[in-house]
Amino acid sequence: MPKLIAIGLVAGLFSSLFGVGGGIVIVPLLILVAGFDGKVATGTSLAAIGITALAGTILYAIEGNVDVAHATLVGVPAAVGAIAGATVQQRISPRALTLAFAALLSVLAAWLLVG
Amino acid sequence: MSISTALLAILLGLAAGVLAGFFGVGGGILFVPTLVGLGLSQLDAEATSLLAILPTVAAGTWRQQRYGNVRPRSALVLGLASIAGVAAGVQIATSLPEDTLRRLFALLLLGVAAQLAWRSRRPAPYPSDP
Image (tube, rainbow over all chains, first blue to last red; front, side, top):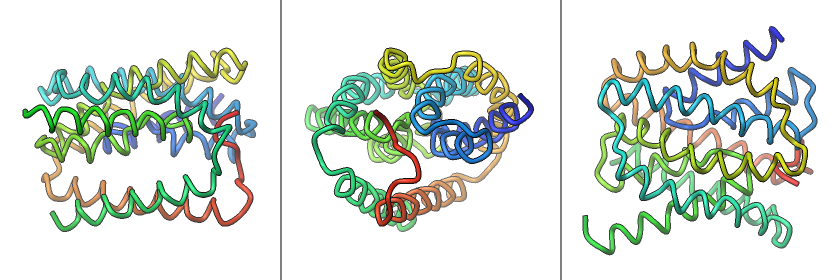
């Protein structure tokens, strides 16, 4: 229980500071610190992120930073994609996709640093 | 916004969702750069990304629940505890200069890219999804 609270606190800070769900922090911590199985860590992380992202959305909306139209534009196709992604996972090489994803993130990072 | 920009945004959203489902994340890491590309400031993109994450994680959780991979009580403790961290993060993000926030986010992207590359060179330390 104290471990889960500590992980939640760190994930929450990370989430609102960067506008991400926090899964990249929660999943490894649940496995390494709380001893969760990988699949259960992923599933539980997703459910926790729902609460985290909702809290962040509300607090940022109060500050006037949330753009609902843009969120809908990317969020709704993403929900469809998420179901597809979990299905494709069974069929293609995870290594190729992981490396492609890493390359994409590196390019985006360079663009944000320069731009 | 032009039709082609909107279509590109929808495609990137779809791609973010596919990656989210594949890697078991919310998709924010791709939403933020997409929204910045659409003309939002870094802070507005991060705030808006959090709202866009909600349908993605709802779909993901619904799917994982069926596989019995969700521990509801643990998720509740994690989620409720995160609210204090979220409040602190909002205070920090809104007080940081735009450039600093953008560079910090770029460093996060590089960190995640490095972690993914590292994971792919060995057997994965944890499976991302069934």
